[in-house]
Every structure is written in structure tokens, then in C-alpha cells.
Image (spheres, rainbow, N blue to C red):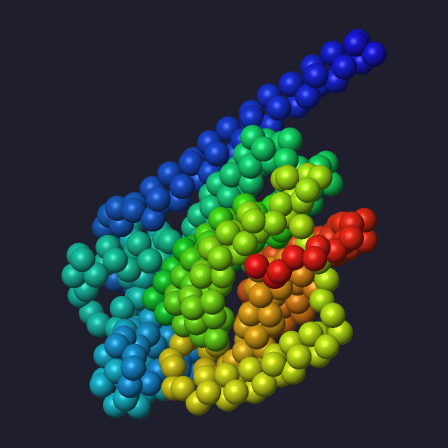
Length: 410
């Protein structure tokens, strides 16, 4: 027996060393990718030679601006789709813009980068800015690999340094979701939106995925520390909504409801420790009439909030000018925000039914992700659905194994 325990300890020690080496390698690879990508973006264009003119056609589908817009980026693309140019106008100039095509002046740098301007003889500053933008776009995969490896190394670090807090299944689930997210981040890079680089948007997506699945895992373990991680989730998702200028129902709900409820829930959960296992929080189930009341309120919220937000004239280029898509997402988002509020209250009051709300929320948000092409966030929804099943089973077993508390909700 002693020999078995000794061998087991030695194996665990070797495994931890291997994990630490892997974390260091991923972090180093991430750093190298950042350095390589940055050096490529900032390469000196060297000598710039004029090639000639090219006819570019205006892409009207990429435009959706109104009087609230300060800068309007208009995309012009060659007939074969291989060359493009973005021209930025003030809203006043954009309103008066009647052209459907433009003549582009093509230049080539000594580093073999093609840059196109809407005028002849660009200044050195214009050449440098345009070259950087093209280089950044050409090296998106390197930057996405860098951010993916960074987030993955942090994920493995959490599992390694807090190994005793997680079961083997939980470790495998957590790392599997993050590996899938990093693969999708490289295969499906994000485009720039509202003047923000697609590289930054992808970093926010990966950070959101990491924090969300860690938070979900801690909830399934009935740990009050999930609410500390959840604060990071809320801040990240507010930034994403602001950057993409969409999902305003969710953003307002996050700001006014989720952040306060996270703090209050942490306090409430800390008051209700399980009598047998103090690291657990005691949980319970809803009654039938309470479920009916919640469903009715969700329907009312969806209709009222969806109608209100759809009437607002908010500009974003994230939907490519598709008003029908934007309206559909507004109503789905309103429903998701309503279910999210119900979910937050269920978590605060420690009700098992919060997992059912997670199911609905995950499916609604997955629909939004598919409609908007946010494929990397679908990995997060897979994580939601699998862990929700795990959490629902764990909480149900707990409730059935103990006589429900005869305490107040608070």
C-alpha cells in the first residue's frame, strides 16, 4: 500500500512538471507570435513605386450609417474581388456621396505590399499608415495564434495550480472547451468592426469564453467564488457590446443587474454553507406556481424591451446593413436578457432551476452567434450546454440527498 501511494505521488509530481513545462512553452510561443506579428506590421515599407490605376466598385451592403455616426468607412472593391480600399468620410460628406465606383491609385512597396489610395502622391505618413493596416490584416492568423496560446496557457495554469479543486472530468472538460475555442479562433478570424481591429475582438471573445466556462464550472461545484469570476465576465461582455455596438438589452441588463447581483449573491451564498461540507453552498428547488410566474414575466419583458430597442436608431456596421437581421437579433437578445435576469435571481436564491435558464440562454445566444457569424463563441455555448447538464445532475443529487432547508431565501 505504501509502495502504491509512493508511486502515485511520483506520477502526480511528474504530471505537474509536464504541465508546467507545457504552460511555459505555450506562453513562450504566444510571446514569439506577438513579436513576429508586431515586427511584420511595423516593417519599413522602403521604396514605394506607382503601379497604375484600378477601378473599384462601392460595396453598399457594408454601409449602415446615420446622423449619430462621426466617421463613415466606405469600402470599394475591384471587380475580381482581389483588391480593395476603404475611404473614410465625415457623415456630412457621406450624405452627399453619390458615386458607385471610384478610381484607385495603386502603389507597391519594396516589401511587396500593395496599397491603394483615392488620390495620387500620398504622403509618407499616409503610406506608413496604409502599409501597417494591410500588414495587420495579412498577419491576423499570427496574432490570433498568439492570443489563443496566451489564453490557453492561463487556462492550463488554473487547472494546474488549483488541481485539488477539480475532478478529472472537470479538468478534461475545461481544457477541451478552451482547445476548441483556440482552434476556432485561428480558423475563423474576426473582421474589424466599428473601427476596432478583428484581433482585439477575437481576444475579447477568447477571454469571455475562458471566464464564462470557469464561472459555470464553479457554479456547478456550488462554490461562492464563481461570483468573483463572474464580475470579470460582466466587464468583458459590456466591452464586447460597446465595441460591436449591438445587444444593448444584454449590455444594460449586465450593467444594472448582473454586476450588483453578483456581489449580493456572493454575500448570500456565504451565509448558507452546507452543514456537512462547508465548501459547498446549500441549494433548493422551485415550486410549480413560481415557475409559471417566471415564464409569464419573461414573455412580457421580451415583447416590451424588444419593441423599445428596435425603435431606437442605433448605427453599427456589424450587421452589414441588414435591418431584418438586426431586428430579429434585438428580440432574441431581449428574450435572452429576460431569461438571464431570471437566471440571476435563481442563482441568488440558490434554486436548481437556474440550470434550466442556462439551457434556454445558451440556445438563444447560440442562435445570435450563428446569425452574426461569431463561430468562436459557439464553442462557449457547447461548454454551457455540457456543463449545464453536469451542474443540473449534481444539484439534483444534492437536493435529493438532503432535506430542503427551512430557512428564509436570504
